[in-house]
Amino acid sequence: MAQEKTVNGVDVEKLQDGMATLKQQPDLAKFRFRAHNQWTKGTQCTTTINDFYGLGQEMAHKKSFTLTADEPEVLVGTDEAPNATEALLYALTSCVLASGIYHAALRGVKLDSLEVHAEGELDVRGVLGLANDVRNGFQSIKLTFKISGDAPEAELLRICEIAQERSPVFDMVTHGVPVTADVQVAAPAGAGK
Image (cartoon, rainbow, N blue to C red; front, top):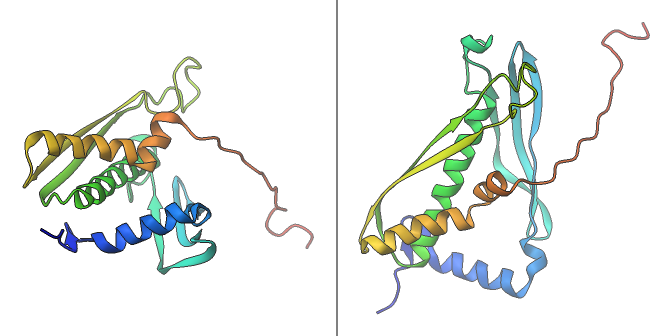
């Protein structure tokens, strides 16, 4: 019996062909994603995502994406958008879910539903400089999966495990990633007039 071409909305044949190409030409698997963030007012900022590098060349999304971040009023924001820590939970759950969908499709498992819920514990004393022994970031994150599909329970549980094992954001959150920063100080607005 031949495997269906599309499973869970994923073109399995196209995905497998792409995987075969990347296996033969590993340099094409190196991607570089970018985000440009700019302060707008108060605790708000706007991030623009447009171009990236992949498959050995510069590429662009079909359209630019703009994401806004803010803080809740209780943290002196205007609560007009999620804050950055909530955006991290969004990134984590979105990536784990996509990883689960890909691997379910590759295994020929048709899913009825897949949900990933995240909850992060954060003590803001670290961020505010009130306690040097308190971490600035999440102290813990808990993921909860809800999955159903046309496979035995053991296979559905395995898909959730693989989703975590293969998710780039899960990997970055659980193992850290080196971050460097270059700082450029610009002249104040109106300087030199």
